[in-house]
Image (cartoon, rainbow, N blue to C red):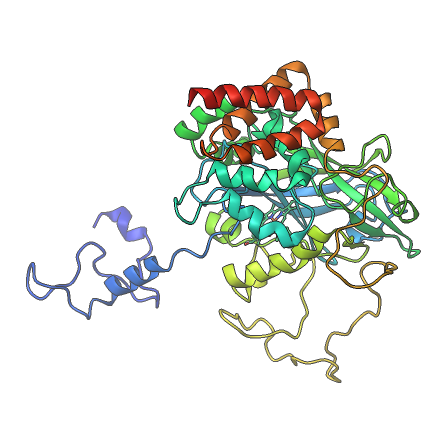
Length: 492
Ligand code: HEM
C-alpha cells in the first residue's frame, strides 16, 4: 500500500464492513471451489443481476438535463398557475428527450419522433408537459395506441421491425397520413436534441383567477435553429456514433453552451371550440397560426447535467396527469388515455414510491399525502397520521378544483370524435405536402418509397392502401410516390 492509498477511504460491503480482498474469491484450498462464506462475491453478483429495471415500453432511449423556465410574457389573463404569475419568475425544470420505437441501447440518429418530456418543479407541485417534437400524432384515440406501437416495435415472429406491419397499420389508419408526411420530411431526423422544436401537441385547458377557461397548445421554438440529417447522413452516424445526440447534449452543457427554447401558446377562447373549422381536440390536426397566433410567454434554458444517468434519467417519471392549479386536460381522447397510462407505467417500471425519488419529487413544495408504505418506502412521514379527516392538524383539501368544469351532452357509447366543417384525415397532410419546397418533396418521396418498397412482394394490397392515403392528401403526392415505389419494387 502506498502512502497515497492510505489517505483513500476503505472499500466496504453493502453493510459497511471493510473489504479485505476485492480481487480473489475465497476458495477451499488454492484453486479449489468457492466457499459460501465469501459473502462479498454473492453480494456483488446478486446486486449485479438486479441492476436493470424494465425499460420504458416506448421512448426507452433518451437523455435529459435540468434547466430554468423564465416567464417573459404576462399570461395571467388566461391562467392562474402560480409559476406563470409574474414576468421574470423562474422555475426549475427537467427535460428528457427520447426516440420512440428503439430499445434502451438503440442509436440516436434515426427517423422517429423525439419525445420532449418537461417537468416544471413549481411551488404548487410538479407540472409535467409530456410532448414530442411534432405538433400532431399518428392516431386520435388512445384505444389504438398499443396496436400502433406493436407495428413500430419488433414482430412477434421475426423479432425485427417489419415494413409489412408498419404500412399495413398506417394504410388502414388514414388519420396517420399527416404525421407520416411530417415524419418522412426533413424534420424526421433531427441533427441533435438541441436543434428541434418541442410541442405539447394536445390541446390543454388553462383557467384564470376569474374562473374563465381557454384551450391552449404549447410551442417550444429552438433558439439554436432547426437542423436535420438526411437519411444517408443518419445511417452513417447511427452506425458510427450511436450515442450522438446524448453526448451532444451533455457536452454542450459542459461547455457552458446552454440550449434554450422560446415558449409560446396558441390560445382559443372556450366559446370557439364547438364551431372551429377543425375539431380542436383532434391530435392529428394543428391549429393554423393564422387562426390562433403564437403568444410568447417564456424562455426555457437547459443548464445542468444529471450526475447519475440511472438515478435521474432512467428512473425519472413524467405523467400528463400531473397538473397544477390553473392547468388541466381537454377532452382529447388520446390525452384522456394518457392520463391513465403513464402513472400506471411508473408503478410497474419504477415502483409505487417512484415519486419519492429526488428527480421526481416536488422541489419547490412538499407532497403531503396519506398514501404510505410499499416497496422501498423511506419513512419520510415519520409519526404523522395517515388518514383524513383527522383532528391532529393533518393536511386538508382546498375545495377548489385545479381546472374548470366543462359541459357535456349526449349518450354514452364507443363513438368517433365529432367532425367539424373542414375535418377529414387528409386536408392538413395535403397542406403540409404543398408547403414543402421541391427538394424536400423529392426527399420525402424517396424516404417514403424506400420504406414502402420493403413490403413483402406478395402484399401489393398493403402498398396500394398506403399509397392511396397520400393520393387522397394530394394527387401529385400520390402519383409521384406510386411511381417511385413501383420502380423500387421492380428492382427487388
Ligand atoms: C394514448 C396514447 C399514448 C399512450 C397510451 C402512451 C403511453 C406511454 C407510456 C406507457 C410511456 C412510458 C412511460 C414510462 O415508462 O415512464 C410513454 C412515454 C412517453 N410518451 Fe407516450 N403514450 C401515448 C401517446 C403519446 C403522445 C401523443 C406523446 C406526445 C405528444 C407521447 C409522448 C411520450 C414521451 C415524451 C414519453 C417519454 C417520457 C419520458 O421521457 O420518460 N406519448 N408513453
